[in-house]
Length: 75
Image (cartoon, rainbow, N blue to C red; front, side, top):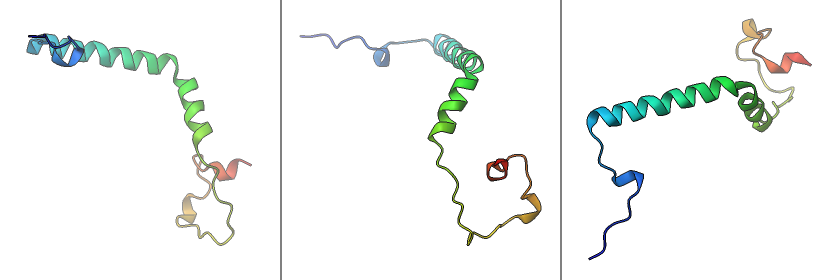
């Protein structure tokens, strides 16, 4: 009879150990994101498609056309 390979999926953890592990991993993820935020943001911005400059496109919210978040107005 063969024993199943030990993987992280079939480790038996107590409720307390599972909660502690989840907290540690979440803190690690948050610390990593805080440290490397600029790099992560540059990566996602490089993947973002350029907005269409179609003159036929209607401005749905003209009162917000000069918003600081509207990247089309930057150029």
